[in-house]
Image (cartoon, rainbow, N blue to C red):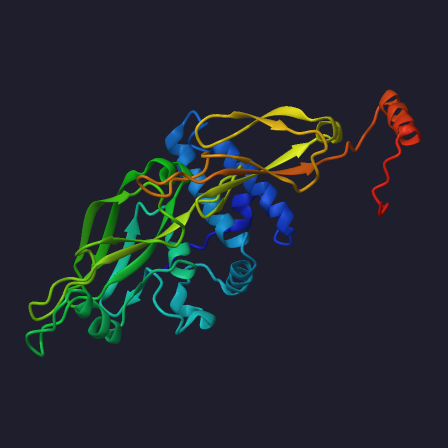
Length: 332
């Protein structure tokens, strides 16, 4: 079945030769604009937020961006992965003709285009099934014809809010039987536990490929992709926030309101704070697990100099240059 090509450059509103910095800036602007926590129309904003995240997931990663650019150069209307020579033999990635039928997911937060070419989804091969699936279930087939169904993997986009509080996500799996051609849709709910980490797999029992000869079905594994956030980077259970400071705020100190995932806090900037310095806000990161202290928020300082000055400001900076004994190039 043909897959609709996704123009990620258009989604972010940047040129195809945009720099990494421009792509990051465009993502942050759009992510803030369409973040479900601040938008009035939450449903529309949520869909747009997912699209922006998906585009940044690809264009913000140099390797994926190169792969995407090569694919885009070869793409023709109505094409799918099997008509693209570069992608032949790359393995099943969540959609298309799999060894045991065709699968499509709903509710994972990713488009069909992303799942096919950039997702982690796959159906385990025969050797995986024989060596892994039956062993995990603690038994061997009772006959030569009995075989457990293959496990299926895909990706699921999880927001930082879901990592913080947990959630229940409705997910659907549409499966086509290659023998009969009939399509079945299975809908179920997936629990996203608080503190889930990027790359962690969530198991949904019995939602994989049907077994044969009386063998049970395989399982569905959803690999967590933590959505990029305009204000925070994730570092394990810790969060990192970049804070721009004026030179006088860094030199003289200041009290600055900084965002957290719950509510803003006032952070004391000590006098003499240096560019790149990290300031820690304890307990404002992500959950680590029940009974364990949560992670921290690290605020990284970025000192910004004014690009334009009024005549009065120019005079004050000139005066400071003459009276200050500070020399950043001095070894003393």
